[in-house]
Length: 185
Image (cartoon, rainbow, N blue to C red; front, side):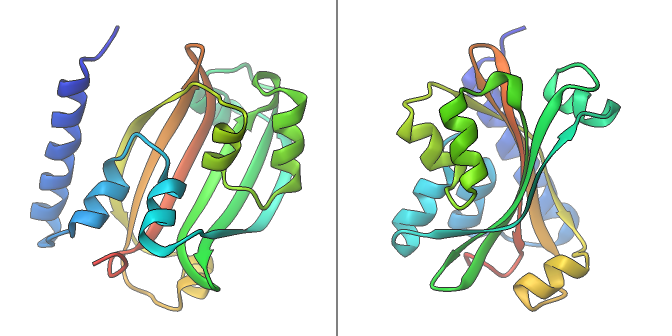
């Protein structure tokens, strides 16, 4: 089933409006762009702050359990790459992100860049001229866990979203991005 691009955009705007209303918040234009973009967040942050950097907190290979198999539309037991990173500028954390990538859908070169770790996924896709699209699944506000409190030095609520990157009609990556509600105001 193909979703009309205008319908998808309207749905994202509705999600943002509902989130603002339910939480008595008014998000900035930059926050709305970061939460709803179907383009590269890395490119947006590079425009806003100058070239950003990435620090990997953790990365490992694992086998997909039922939950991850469903997220990625793969079979349980297939090998995936788990990556947890912080996008930052001059040491100031901007966005925390987690990604799950089915290795069977990546070329050896892309897998090698993922393992090298400190390259943003947006840059990896651009470097290899990967034609892809992003489908935003959810946008929400969450309470920070201990790791997010430590990274961002705050216990305020976090804006979050998750989405999939699709290449050749297959999910290439599932990504969750999180940042404090006061960021990008």
